[in-house]
Length: 444
Image (tube, rainbow, N blue to C red):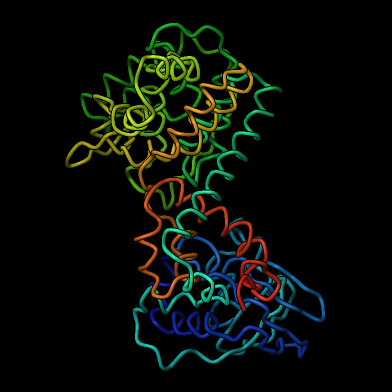
């Protein structure tokens, strides 16, 4: 939850709760007296960014989709620095509990309308998960469907999502080369949510170097181009890190092509386990294992005699992404109390499901290798249940009564990705406007 929410206490949470429970079709007025119809208040956001995402509103008779931010008064928009934060650029409405004094100039007025509502004075906080998400009309369909039928529905939708990913990768491979594209997406996956474009930039720079033979040279280029390497003489480095930085700098100076601006890494709000330094260390391990040719390496593994279940186990458990030094560090200056692999099995499951296996499937089309294509699909269908994410959790609360029912149905990667596919193509596509959504009208 955002830091300013914690400081403002339950007063702002009560206002968020009131907006979250506002009825679809409710008509209210802006501070200027213009009509606003709430088609969908948005999804309550408990991560960085606006309080509600993907709202759908009629403002002055015009349908608008965007985000909603909740504050006590209008001036909080500037007090919290949202006007300088790109995460808030899609905000289209300000929800307030108090009428602000008119600003003396436009520079102190947020560039979107504001409405006044009363805070939720009834609910007890903290709210339960079920209280945060309202059911949609489609709950009647999901409630009446058999568990097995629903699993099969989600598994089919998951396979469709897999095939879509594979088609996108295939188009990129035809244009830019198979190994190059697979490597780019491995880099991107190491960026998680906050540093994806930064890792793509690192891949672009890394790709300019040809024939990087030897682990030390490859590692030096990754660290050097990242711009994260500290001065080896820094007094803040412990003995192990000082030795690593000194050796890496020496290799980097012999290899570097040119001096350029450092990549602007995002570290604010990033968990210690996911810091970009640890992900770069993970890349050095993965690229060493793959000999910088992941598709050649993995397709060779599929020809080694292992079956699909064994290959799935190899990708998630057997492919150990552990670094002797970096398993012990958050960054160059901070050490963990106990070691943790730079990429664990849960994250490798995600990378296998979203990158490696769809890429292998696309690669099989280029090679006209039907065996490899079928093998990659069956392996993907064998992958275990991934870590829960916000979209899947939201969907399960909207669709199931009780929401805990999903634990009996969503039990592997295929069904998990099926939920994401349905949620993205229906709930998010229609921004919660259930009346316009085919999924919301499956059974009436």
